Image (cartoon, rainbow, N blue to C red; front, side):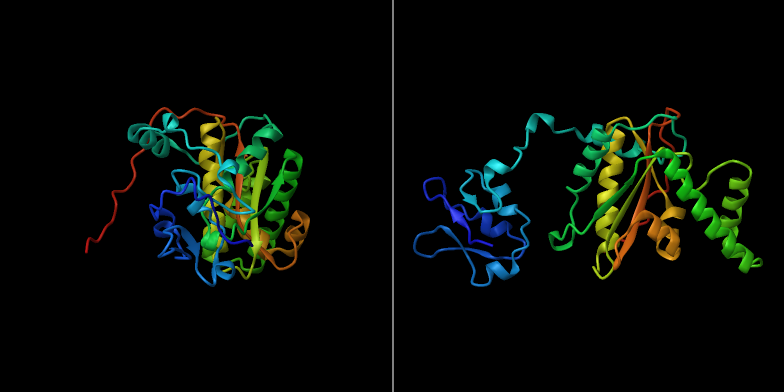
Length: 274
């Protein structure tokens, strides 16, 4: 990794980059008043790009990132608080999908936006598996049901397995509670030893979910599938997860089969103010 490149003709010595650096790896030179890296910059910088993004004059760059590489933020596209409130509150977990595939270019855009999510130390640990074929989605759902059936048969009196019993019964009656008939499933996985895999992948999947909503799609966490992937070796292998990885989330994606007309109530925030 190279040191910071500073265009002295553009730099206005406002020290915003130094103040914004999350790891405090930039300081202002006492004599020239230009930003310079601290001694261990190359060892600690995790390439978040904040210094490049925040510089008002575009004076800072690296070999791996320049102001020209970054998409300008268009203020005219900013949404109002009222728009944000309705968008976030009206988002639904969609469990009824149309029998209509989502074009691959849209699925690719979902993943692109998902990868803009924050992650610990900017690790961006996520890897993706997209089950694009609806027939394969159903086959995988069947594998989950088979796994559930074995667990229920081995523990017939375990009341905590009531969800498994219901899912197996529904499958036998012709209804899929695993993937809900969605045409596609997206699985996020990462190195099992990364300590923030669950949080990072959940944030990325939430980005995917919310952006999908803006594109007229519906998504829902595939909890049964996600749980089974890590506990059922044949399913793990069928999805092709690499050794040493763990699934940290799975999401069903499709076009909603219904339209929501209103926003249901939620519990009020349970807060302790200090």
